[in-house]
Image (cartoon, rainbow, N blue to C red; front, side, top):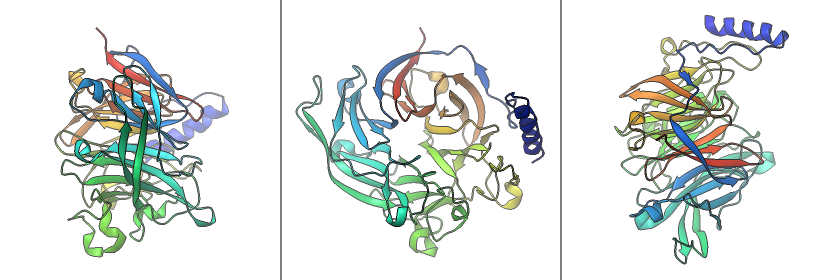
Length: 393
């Protein structure tokens, strides 16, 4: 708490002098590397890309195909080898405003058998309200998928299986990231929609990590199952704006979360835990009011890593490839305001800051390709690119 107050006073003083506040992370700094250990190749350009997912298959020509969402409601099939892209039809109608629109895209673990593709998106409600939703459809190709590309691609029989409750006013903190567990159940982030208190309440699903079946029902054995109703879908609570979600090879689930003014977090997601928002944070309110940073003493789970000042963590993945063996099992995090790619070293249930590479762009998402190459999604409302990272030779 003392650090936060000192930092705020320093920031105010420097702002009055027209200088930037110093970057003084309270929890150990990552090494800011001027030299990147990778090459960067532009793959394709989009309008407002948000997420991507590779299509699994038995050969490199098929697995080089990825789905890419654009926030304004378009889904694309991208050949990452050539940069060629084709629009996918059958996408649900989305509400585009502020942070809202078409969000995550994830393929079902048994995609080879059912061709299911899951999308998260924002839908309009009554009286100017909105909320996130998740659904799935079958991805169908007309014509060969490779090498010349399909003649048409469609998402058919789309079915909505989950909705944020309640729908509220405002256009922020939808979160809606999806991750499938090894057992085929689905984990989903639901932001608190900038409403604060719902993150600590059990009569709605805002500010939670949810655990669902692939059909959107409460997964068996959830921590709040005895309460019944909507609480039976909760896995954890006390969250703000959760924009990264990924399983490590050992089965542990990790999540990145935007704090308020400072206090961005990397969390190990454990069943039944409360992560404290808005009662505890290593950040401060935008009006300068302090927030208690005593998590453990107040009964809340501590973040494993946190940043102050903010980096604005976007998408995150746990790397499992072979092209960058020194990254294996580590978190790769896209930083929006931080304009960086960040590596956090993960060892079991522990994590520490490792590397931070300046990318000179807002990094919305991070994904892994079939050979272990890494893809970055540039954030932009009027234009964003996808880049491929490969080791320097």
